[in-house]
Amino acid sequence: MDKKEKHIIRLLNRQDKRAISLLYDDFAPTLYGIALRVVRSETIAQDIVQETFVKAWMHGKSYDRSKGTLFTWLLNITRNRAIDVIRSATFRQSGKIQPMDSTVFDNERLSTHQNTDQIGLRKIVGSLEEKYRIVIDLAYFQGFTQQEISDHLDIPPGTVKSRVRIALRELRKFFEEQNIIVLWIIAPWLSNSLGSFLLV
Amino acid sequence: MRMDKENFLKTGLLEQYVLGLTDEKETEEVERYAEAFPEIKAEIESMRKAVDDYARQYAVMPPEELKTRVMEEIDEKEAYSQPQGSLRGRTERSNGGRWGAWLARGIMATLIILSLSFYQSKVAADREYEVLSREYRAFQQECSRRQAQQEKLQEVYAFLKNEHTTPIRLLSTGLVAEAEAVAYFNEAEKKVFINPTLLPPPPQGKAYQIWADVAGEMVSMGLIDGHSKELQPVAFIDGTESLNITLEPEGGSKEPTVTLLYVNGKV
Image (cartoon, rainbow over all chains, first blue to last red; front, side, top):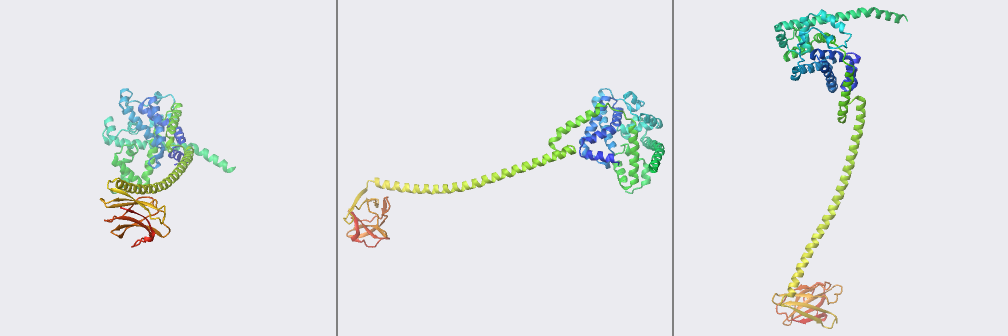
């Protein structure tokens, strides 16, 4: 746990709204992007993000780091709210629901405000096969159970399990590689700076 | 249950757990393993990080005003919850704490003052109650005294009104010229009352005694309070021919002191 995280948790536990401001700056784009993927409406997604942070502020006292990271905690709030919304009768009636897995990734269509990470997204999308990505999306973003995924994709539960394993292995591999690349990039600069620092 | 770390890692439960796909029993099992083996805990953390990193890939900048909306709603909620004192920021809370402390002190002081004043009123009320009950007891005594007096007066009045009651003037024998008394004699009821108001007050250590003359023999009818201004009952003696009042030593005598016969009268 880094210093900033500790600071935020301390503020959060005290119900200090500065914690929400910091959390918002760090996580709002991700949460908004995920809400957007689930509900497919900018207005509703914004409401969900707003509710997420208000709820985080209200329940900040009971946040416990040992139960998960701040991000996981916030993501859970966003995701649960988003799932509630798409499963609600009014949302269904509004005809907004679309099975997420039936569409290709089209975040550009959803919003003109694109995050710089979008390049990373293309990379990961490219590196992760569709059948693995769908399993993660249904489970993680839409809160499906194994049985629901199995029914939805019409594959046996055993296959769901093995796809989950492979998907996670691939994800870890991808992000670990990315970290190594970052290290490769900054390492010479770091040693240079350190060297010159020592020389001075 | 025996815990086998290697086999457990192969089950794929960890991955399902991280994606929220485990049921309650499986979740418990994973958490038990995570607690027992730090490597498993680290593995979970690393998977979580990968999934979180993946989720971040979907980041989309929300409109700028969304943050303002969020902070405004929190401000509103905070303002609303402020009186409860619990949902506040640090500085405001310490302020609130100070106000709270002052408020508590204020309430405390008010309570102390109130209880003191209540205590004082209670003491005063107790005192007043004591005085009043003393007065009441005295009043009650006075009442019963007056009642008794009234009964006595009524009795006397009834006696005086009685047709068989005859007033008898006892006149001075000349020993003390102005001495006089009145007896109310009622043979039918066998009662005699004396009005001693015209007798001079008896000297110190002396008292008046009244006698009935029954066939030449003096029979004591009792002592008379020479200082009283009221009618006094004395004993009735059958066959009384005359009434005689003598001055005797205090406590009375067996035989009348004839030399000190003040007044007398025939029945």
